[in-house]
Structures are given as C-alpha cells and as structure tokens.
Length: 348
Image 1 (cartoon, rainbow, N blue to C red):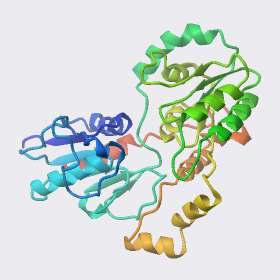
Image 2 (cartoon, helix red, strand yellow):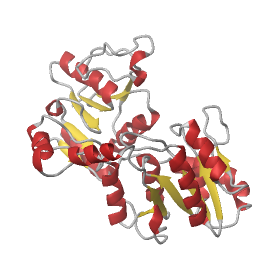
Image 3 (tube, rainbow, N blue to C red):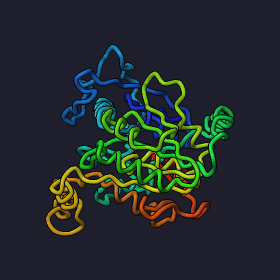
Image 4 (cartoon, rainbow, N blue to C red):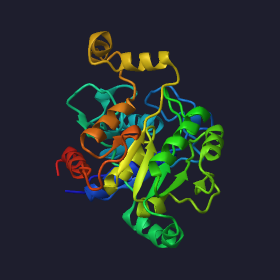
C-alpha cells in the first residue's frame, strides 16, 4: 500500500501555520506543503467564503494541481477556501482537517478541531479540545535562556513578565485600559521586578500610555518588526510569573504549558451594548442557541470561555485575585489525541 499523500495548506499567519505543523509532526507521516498567499485586498479584508482560489495571489502562492492529496490539514478562512477548492477538484476524494471554526459548510470537513473559545454544534465531525495546540519550541526557549540569563539576573526576584496583546472585537485595549493595567501590574509585581513586553497588535496609543504609567526604570519592550532584542522567549525561560492580557490565547497557553503562575488581565468590552450582544449571541438558551443548533448562525469567539477553563484547572487566576501557587496545575497535552484522530481518517 502506497503512503497517503498529505498536504498542509498554509497561509500567511505564522501562528496559525505553527498549529498545523505541530500536528503534522505528531502524525509522523511525510507531508507536502502548499503555501497560499492572499491578494493584497484580502490580507486584511475578508473574502466571501466559497470553494475558490480567486482570492489568492498566484505569483506568491504555490501551485495547486494534481495529483490531489488524500488528506489536507489547514487553518483559517483563506487557506480553508483553497482546501475546499482542492476537494472539489479531486471529486470529493481529498478529506480536510480544519483547525478552528468553519466559516461555512461544516459538513464538508472530515474533522474540525476546535478549542474552547469557539461555540460550535456537536456534530460527528467535531473534535473539541480545551486549548489550542500552539507551544513554543523547547530548544528555542533554552537558547534564549543562555542569551538572556545575564541580563535578567540583574533584576530583583521574583521577575513578573507582563505580556500585552491588543484589542479584538468586542473588547478594547486602549490607552485608558493600558494605564490601569500598568498600575495594577506594578502593584502585583512588588516586591520584585516587572518586565513589560508589547506585541504586534498593541496599538501605539496603548503602548505610549502603558510606558508612561509604569514606575521609572521598568524594563519595557516596544514591539517592532525590526527589533532584534525581543525578550519574549527569554521571559518564557526565566521569568518567575506572568500577567497576560486576556485577548492573547497563544501567550496564555504557552505560559500555562510551562506551569508558571499566570494572572489574566481580562479586557473590558468596548461598550455596554457590545457586552450585551456578545453575551446574547453565545447564550446557551433561547433563540441564539436554537439558531446555532439549526445551523443558521454560529457563536462568536468567547475568550472568557478559555479563561474559565484555565481558572477551573488551577492554571491561572484573574488579575485582581493574584497569582496561583507555583506548580498548582499542569496543562494536559491533547496533541496525541488529535494526532490519533487525524491518522484514523487514513485508516492507519
């Protein structure tokens, strides 16, 4: 029997691609990568979901042509549209594993692997997991330990790392929240040291407000694409405890996988109306639940659901409650179960 042909249909988002690569490594079979890059207007814009490659930049994307794969692993709106197109070209032979929620036609996927922040109906092809599968490379963290050890050794212990993301619907991370966050983080880090790192999504106004509200001399990393001294991996290696803004699932999960004390700075809603609408759409009862069950709508991403799982497992606390005890819990590794489910599609 010949080996199955497996394609990874990858996009332009490194964090998304990393989750697909992690599963590909775990299934232990040869894979081929097909990178698909959207046209300029669809890098930020959202194309209508259909089985199509019209939204792709043909000059920057890999060619998609026969022989078609037996299995496709993909993630995200734009790559999954290409995966659906491949499935059509193969006459329905190519099976698709999607990581994250489908934007349309969930029945066309053989497996949907979705973590707790997504409200999806329990269909036979849904494989629910509690946490996204992303993780930092252990070798990279150890290399960063050697690089950052001397620099961080000068700071009084314990070192608290404040990792700041950015606002996302329906939440806000603006200058007002940034100032409040700086004050609360500085108080929680005392006695000891606070080290602050912003990220690609942190708005300039929030960066400025955060830095100005911190105590003088607080180490502060202002993210930029050109920065050569990003402390993120060094902090994962050496910080004693972490405060992470509640929008960043990836940073929360990476810290939780390390078993370090984690406090989550939950973001406020952009408005009272936004909060009410978000709660209504994700309601487990009444019309919203009935519409989701009938397939007319799907729930909005619910970041608070991920927070609740981390709190319940003893892996984190809300910022106002302080830090959990060191070693209070460990994040279950769901990767082996996911890899087994993917291999089962190939009847291996």
